[in-house]
Image (cartoon, rainbow, N blue to C red; front, side, top):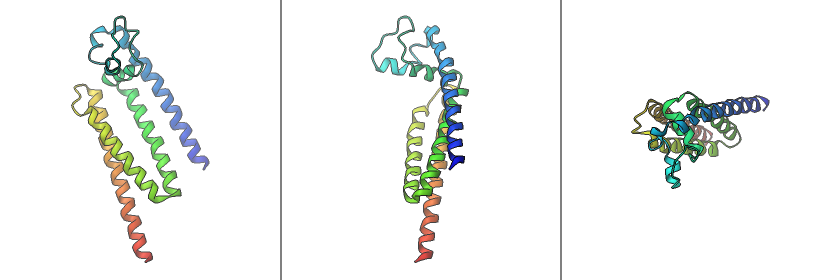
Length: 158
C-alpha cells in the first residue's frame, strides 16, 4: 500500500507544480489585449466585460497557457491521468467489476472532453485533443480487455 501512497504523492506534487506553472504562464493574457476576445471563453460566458485585464477569470489563464504554451498544461493532464490510473488499479484490486465500469466511464469522459478540442487552430489545442483521444481509446480498450478476461475466467470456473 505504501507504494501506491508514494505514487499518489509524486503525482500530486507534479500536478500541483504544473498547475502553478501553467497558471503563471497563462497570466500573460492580462497584458495581451488582442487575445481577450479569443482566449477568455469562461469570462465571456459569465458575462464579464474585460477592460483592464484584471477582470479575467483565473481558469482562462489555463486556456491561454494551453493555446500558446502547452507544456505545463500537458504535464497537468498527464499527471492527472497517472493519478486516475493508480486509482483505477486500486479500485480494480478491491472490486474488478466496479473497476472495469469506472475505467469505461473515464474513457467516455475523456472522449467527450476531447471533442471540445476537435477543431482547435493552435498546436496546444491539437496536442490536447490527441492526448485526450488516445487516453480515451486506451482506457476503453483496457476496460474491455479486463471485461473479456473476467468473463473467460468465470466460464472456466463454471
